[in-house]
Image (cartoon, rainbow, N blue to C red):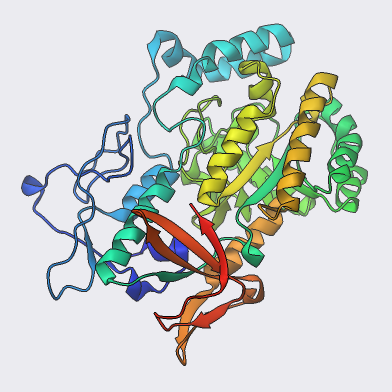
Length: 467
């Protein structure tokens, strides 16, 4: 059985071994995890995947004398998958919400969309998305349920093992406290025309971004455009097929479009993908020849398809790495919420930093070049630049994050001659870290290298990173 603690923290398996507490179905009581205001997932024997913001109860139990494992009365992998893969149910409030979220309404909207004026289109979007920030689950504006579950269990592992700290491989290269990516979805010909100017703006703040391009119908994707983007050390990815919102409408249509998407992935020499309007069905992703995807929001209250993966870290969907969207899109911020400031972005950044996760942005060249919006975007870039200069964030291209996370996923912590050592390709940029507890909360300490003595009495010299 897989161990999500080992997979996430990259820590020694024998220090965080789990065993499910088995009971007959008739004897099983509902469980809760003591993680806050919501409960997510289901017990080992409970097939329900409904999540509606219920409160929490019993968590993992300490082992009986002589038992080496932390006993967990539920299938931890199933709970993590339920969240990351959005396998819970979402209740849409009201008749209007249910109607607008239906497949028929979605198809009708995208058929009529080219004929709608900007004001009508924005009005329909506000009607559907209004008060999305009031939905109880996932938690707005950032949901870190996955991290809370894993941290809670790591704390219990420390207590059960009666150790002061557990070593693991730090999340980001060179000991960076968090990571960030800036991505640009190009929806229209006007957006294409704005690409050179937008690149110059990003570069002025020493930030390189990825550009997701629509291969068909919307505009021409010329070799000159691809060369321009790559010539500026930016990244090219594929953005759906034609941006008509029907990629995941039915499986037959998806399989047909997937073949074309895979052809464009090769033609564009792209590794990453994002679907139009963040529509998604992760069960079909294995038909896409992509290294990473960026179509799953952390909290999808402001997206046409509700849900959210409830994590601020990359995670694997089969062989594909998901880089979730963890902040609000520029369009939703300005046109749905009517907020022309970076205060919500700053709040989301703060919450993601607390978990040391991935801060990811979507900014559209189609909309951001208007004077008022551009001023706010430059303010955001300046803020991110300051975070980087303060050593608080690693700003990278999505492809670099994909390569790092795959390298880290292949690394191991081994005990050799009384020292913990990180082994595997890319380990020179990895940092050995230790998880301990302080006041009932988890605390991370990041060392300056990829090896350290395993003597429990030794206090590693490193940077303390509170959570």
